[in-house]
Image (cartoon, rainbow, N blue to C red; front, side):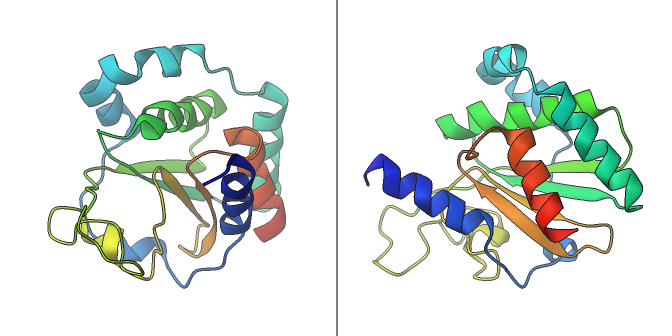
Length: 179
């Protein structure tokens, strides 16, 4: 797929409304610290070099505080996925730099591709992946996908594979648009 179409798809899907709730997550997830311990060697460089924009993090914190809101994020991914190794550590660093209890990040790993899927079917292996991967409610197209929810467990938006700008700028855009 040409790059501009891929980028356009990401932008469109980032704003897509899904009928999902935080409570629809039933598979075991990892905390950021558990993820860093388990995958540390594979993601060490990406975690170390990423520097989230401090002014954007302050704006996210201020927005959450002014609206008395909390942000819940779940990252869907897999150990075999290079984009997950790049962007999941970035989201973790963003959250850690915010130094707030108003943001919770959970990581749902173990998604496997079904190489024999037919056109129109989910590309994710139905029995070897967490059940959310093939659940049509989540409409998982690519990984990593970051799903955002508010304090009432309601879906706000998502970032698919790569942010349009940066992880923190796209997060702020979702919050400004949906909170």
